Image 1 (tube, rainbow, N blue to C red):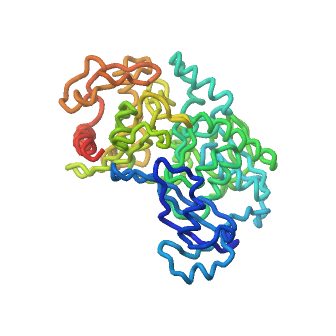
Image 2 (cartoon, rainbow, N blue to C red):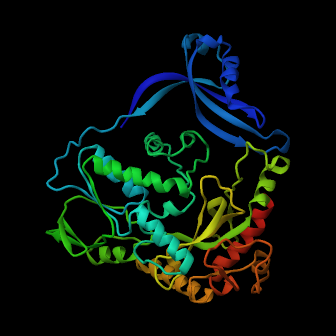
Image 3 (cartoon, rainbow, N blue to C red):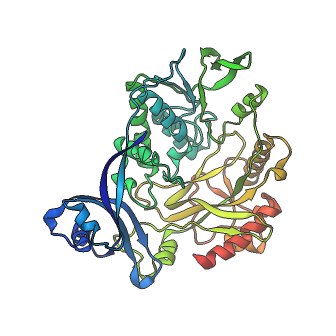
Length: 464
């Protein structure tokens, strides 16, 4: 739980130009506070962000925390953007206070499952983790084989396996929560090998190349604390007696369990169907569908940074855009991957799904982002799992339109806006490893989706 540790000063609006080094920050700090340098005891970056709104004044803005010798004297100066704050530190639970007859079981080893299991292990509960996919070492081999040959491993792929779908994504660390425990997650990731700058950058990301070792180190920590992680194991059934959970069935084995955490993600559709059959209450919910859009990364850099594009202090530019279409549907970009690629991400045989992926350096030729349109429960049916059938039908149709070999159906943006099937790709070379099949995406997606996408592309282009 978060506990108070000490007090400090928080100073906002400290700026560095693109040509100024971070080594200047303590000098700017003592100037702002109007104190001698020997009175600055310690400092750290609390938040770093890039301000590129004005082409003539692209700069980094910092929020700094520091400890000084005479804190009250500084506060009495009433300096703008200087406040007194309480520092919080997450205190690791030493042991649980609830006695359990059997160890808790966590199903799924993506981000939610990993951190649930880690915290349970830190509390002394020695959890059992069940993951249908492979460990990351074997999973990488299965995924890369699929990307090269089109041979899909239905239980270990971009969706299933150690680390979840994020292992083969950009590794963004995005949350809108202001909960103080969020910092605990970031600190653990750094402890397992993530770059320390994720603790303070405005848009932290790790990258798929670094994530693969991080999730392995996290797994080793759970095991060292007495937990167990079983791969290639699928939850098949619940054992319920008198309305209470008594156990689970995994690969035919009955395992006693009273506490079960389901961290099964988006694509474990057979598990959702089993849960419904066992009487677990479910409700239909909204989700989103769409397509990945690719552009040269240099185009995005120039749009965002203008004449500063290519400056060594600037990372590959990204964007996050939203639009409300005339049909009332929300449209938004999601999981934008600067300097990345579009990757084959199917988990169902005979279905095509795509995702975006970037390594830590984000240095590949193209940028890509999902362009998604809101889907409402009334679009797909009355029952909770009708949304799954809706998704599966689209995936199968995409597979057929791609040619039946996991190639992805694709269309040039210009042709999409003209409702004209593409005959070939243009100047942007698709990064999708298994190849693309030119087509008209209006034949794949519902009209209420494509019309919203068309409006959003035009509106977002103006804002970008």
